[in-house]
Image 1 (spheres, rainbow over the protein chains, first blue to last red):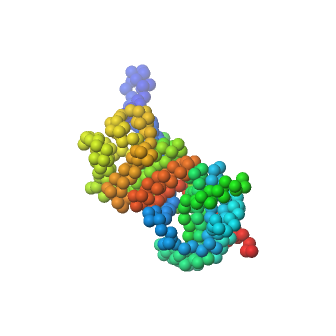
Image 2 (tube, rainbow over the protein chains, first blue to last red; image 1 turned 135 degrees about the horizontal axis):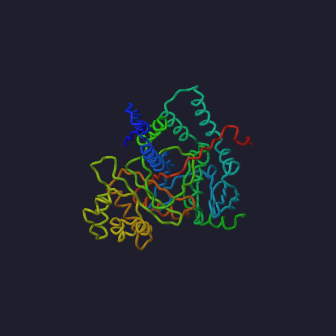
Image 3 (cartoon, chains in turn green, purple; image 1 turned 90 degrees about the vertical axis):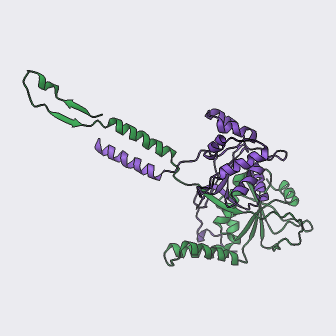
Length: 211
Length: 199
């Protein structure tokens, strides 16, 4: 590969002169190759590893006895209904056929949408967790990550006032809506939430809901 | 010239050392965004891809323990189930392949095909309707081969939820209640002054 460039002029005139050799290695092919390899690695590398959102679904209960179903207070229950065209509705309490049905209210996944309502309902727990995280961030408290996670988990477990959010999607909802809804739970530090199937009453409520 | 060579060598070394190859995916899947910063585990993970059009693909790794070859076990189990004999060559090839999604009768053709276009054409999604639920068998066999594998679902943001739900239901029937939904990170911060005024 090494190319020796000799001074041809020296031969002119027939005199013997000391030839000047400049022993330079031509690096262009090497650079070419490296350039190619760099490009290859750059394009095939996965820089950011995939992030995952963990969700635990309520276990499927094959026995249909409703007696053992966990009792949840209607006051704390808050339902989010998802339907076609990324529409979001919510209502407070339970939809009990023997009582007047609760009003469905339309909202969205923006900052002033469902988040405001959830934050309002989850005020105490959210403030508590936020202050705890803030203390760690500003260095007022030095705690290992695992201990902090455990602490936050306990705060969520001990919470008795926050809403119990039920996320219900009908057949026209998109996957994105569900992910958005679960994400909103993480943003608002909601302690208890579940993804469940909507009941027939709720499906009917959706049908007559304001568009 | 020399500084350039230096720079390239440096870059090249950096990329060689840091690179983890992007896994090949059967379809273009645009995942939804979330605030979750948890990373997906490297090993012992069963991934189910749901494309925008509802096609379902499946992938499982060989496991962290290199002496276990989960994909081999899985293929043998599936072969028994559907009365298809896979040759040792098929199995060896399948072990090093990535995600797949086709009716099991096409699997052998897919493994042995060298034409990438034909390979893509064969990836028509794993059937999962009630008459011929092959996905259920894939999940069941995968659960039996590697019980500790976590389950990740990578679905397109615009997929119908019913499709994803069907996959989740199948998983729940096989005792999986914890799902890792693959998302893109999008940071969103809520501060105390974002709280609406107390009523």
